[in-house]
Amino acid sequence: MAEEVKVRVGGPEDLHEIMKMALMVCDENGLSEPNIDKILYDVVPSLHQDRGIIGVIGPVGGPLEGFVLLRIGNLWYSDTSIIEEKTVFVHPDFRSAKGGRARKLCEFSKKTADELKMTLMIGILSNQRTESKIKLYNRLFGKPSGVTYTYGAKTGEWKENAANSI
Image (cartoon, rainbow, N blue to C red; front, side, top):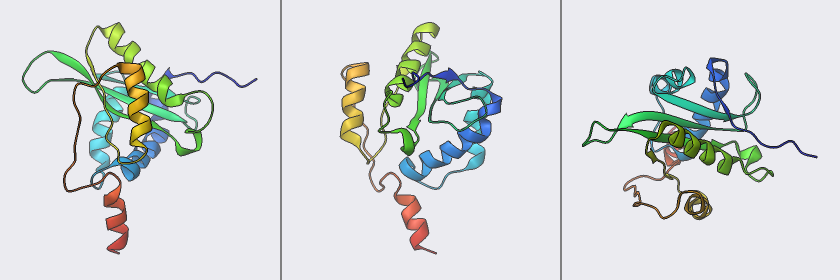
């Protein structure tokens, strides 16, 4: 019998694996070339639960199957704190595996918001498999509060353009 997929709180020992996956996120869903320092600026404090938290699937310090990066921030017009989802990512090797990793990471996000009694802002920024992601999010979060558009870029396109310019 397969072991149930569980999300745990990531810690400093997960930094290397999270950074590997963060770069995969940028390759797949990024709009422009990643800046490692900017990624670390959100990841490192979150691994210490300093105005953020990272939920991970996988062994401590070992290869990860997925992660969610949540940060505490403010709406641009208010001092009220909210939880901002920065990314939900499942490694490509585990996307079709049993266990619902994306769903589990989203449920971790909801649980975090419930425990902190804070609003969670979560969304989808991707031009790949978007419809299936929308269906999942509608089931988990209800009707959306809006939609995001990108003009002048497609997610992941920066990587193709960079490779073509070499």
